Structures are given as structure tokens and as C-alpha cells.
Image (cartoon, rainbow, N blue to C red; front, side, top):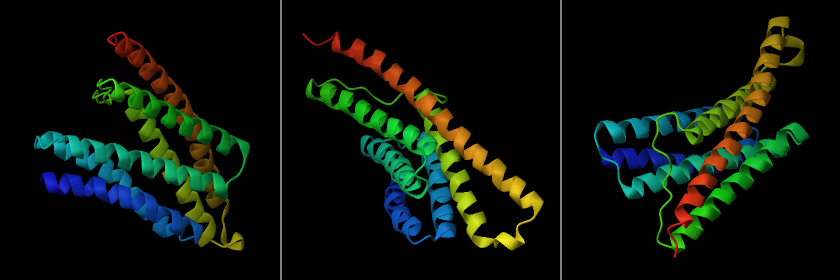
Length: 199
């Protein structure tokens, strides 16, 4: 079971890079399915690891890396495809947030101090990741709809559906930004507490 759990994390890492060419060549169905499977695997491997008590340090690292790569790589590609300020600005801030948190962890690592990912089921970091994944699925679904249906064949209900999905993507992106900033603030307070141990 441990092998399968780690395999799911490895799959997510591979999918994070495979999504880049699928979006470049506009294989949106492939991108959508690949991202959806990777997102589902994120929940599934965590569930299995807890249920069968097969958590490991290497598994935790792979899970963390897989999540970050999957979301960040896809968000970067979305900004390339939709270079508008209300897409680019929140994505840049969220990527800077990831670099900031990594910097805090790296510094504490030099001091032999750990700053683990919060394990609460509904931690702000997990809410942030969930919102990001919902947002990306919405945008990828929108790409699929706009490229598989000809403009002449789009019905009024289809236009309404695409508009709703678009709003879900944009609204979800800004909610993700809010959760990212909130989570970064929590990490900052944790970091401040940790450095008090440094003499």
C-alpha cells in the first residue's frame, strides 16, 4: 500500500510536467482529464496513507512537491493563455507566496528546526490548494467547451453555462489568493515562534 500511495504522488509530479505540452498544443481534453485525475489522486493518497497508516517522510515530501508543481505549473500556463491582469496578478502573488514559505522553511532547516505542513483536516493551506484546483478545473473545462463547440452551434444555455464557469474560475482564483495570503500569515507567525528557539 505504501508503494501505491507513493506512486500516486509520483503520478502527480509527472502530470504537472505533462500538462505543459498538452496546453501548449491545445489538447484541452487531455489537459482536463490529466489535471482532474491528478487532483483526485491528491485526496486519495492522503486518505489511503491515513487509513492504512503508511505515512512516511519521503511520501510526505513527494506529496508536497506534487501538489505545488501541479498547481504552479498549470497556473503559469493559464497566465500565458489568458494574459489579463485579473488572472496574472493573483497568480504572481500566489507563486511569490510559495517562494516565501519555501524560504522560511529553508532558513529553519539550516537551524535544524522543522516547520511542517499543518495536519488539520481543514487547514487554510489545504483550503487554498482545494480552491486552486477547483479554479483550474473550471478554466480547463471552459477551454474544452470553447474549442469543441463551434460559435454557430453554441446555444443560449451554453453561453450562460460558459459564463458561469468563467465566473467560477475568476472568483475561485481570487478566493485562492485570499487563502494563500491568510495561510502565509499563519506560517509567518509560526516562523516567528520557531526563531525564538534560536540562540
